[in-house]
Amino acid sequence: MTHPSPIIRKKTRRIYVGNVPIGDGAPIAVQSMTNTLTTDVDATVAQIERIVAAGADIVRVSVPTMDAAEAFKLIKQRVDVPLVADIHFDYRIALKVAEYGVDCLRINPGNIGHEDRIRAVIEAAKDYNIPIRIGVNAGSLEKEIQEKYGEPTGAALVESAMRHVDILHRYDFENFKVSVKASDVFLAVDAYRLLSQQIDQPLHLGITEAGGARAGAVKSAIGLGMLLSEGIGDTLRVSLAADPVEEVKVGFDILKSLRIRSRGINFIACPSCSRQEFDVISTVNALEQRLEDITTALDVSVIGCVVNGPGEAMVANIGLAGAKNKSGFYKDGQRQKLRIDNQNIVDDLEAQIRDYVAKVEKQQSIAVQQVDD
Image 1 (tube, rainbow, N blue to C red):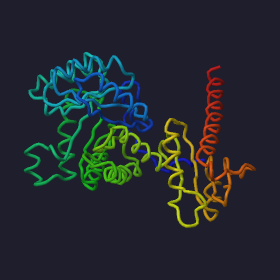
Image 2 (spheres, rainbow, N blue to C red):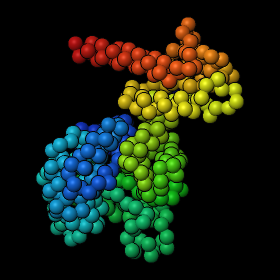
Image 3 (cartoon, rainbow, N blue to C red):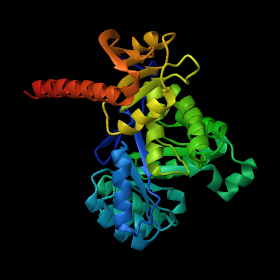
Image 4 (cartoon, rainbow, N blue to C red):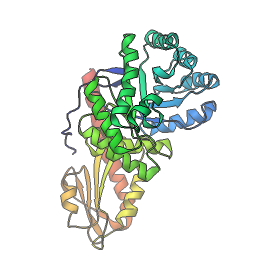
């Protein structure tokens, strides 16, 4: 029962990272990055699989050495998700992973070295039809730019980005996206706004080094939310000092809150008060854990009393309005004869949600089959 997002996205060029479309109105892709040693192939593959299970469209892997490049070859053979190789300085690593089937190169052309090395990487990207992501960070600006501006500013980040963009343009290479990340929300937002006015390539959003799970999620939600609400951004990564799976979850929560892209259950739950007829907090926490496997988008309202319960339930797919002993149950805004026993609320509500999802998925499957026929 979610309404369409009122956000009008900026039109950008379309590129592809593997089979994932980026830009030109394509769904905003959610990305994360492994933090295992790339040379530990089994650990890295296992983490990629968990990241993908959480919903990630793209996964970035650091490839700092030639040994890591050889490990990347094995990793790439064992996963289906598009992989971005994060490479700095050594152009030979970029050439090697291009040969091994990388789906995107995250480099800064200006850091690769001599002109012939830059040309070699760009030609390899052309030959293998691999996009490049220019990644500028406030913490690693070129020395002369730091001296010119005195401190990182939005204009400084954009000048650095445009240096790299100009290199790609010089070699007639347009298959790229750009990020201008900073740990400060206002600095990052300013940089992305300025850059969005100058180029039409897709922008990869992020508040870099945002912090731990809670503070980093808040900073990312504010910064990315400001940009996304203005129609800026084609891919995103939430950078947390936490399990990469949490980055993906927060990324989807941000998109879900802006009604840009939905995955899984959107819980509408009251903070609870003395009016509650059941333990709302423990109920919602238990349901979130039990229903993590559901990817179908739907709204579930869990309200502990009759003050706001019926109103919220009537605009949700599944709704619960707290009442003494047994709570009111709603489907698609309609009050049902069934009432949920407050003593078995988690089990019963989980069963109702799963039944609802199964019916929705069956209807979607029939609709797809009819189109194919």
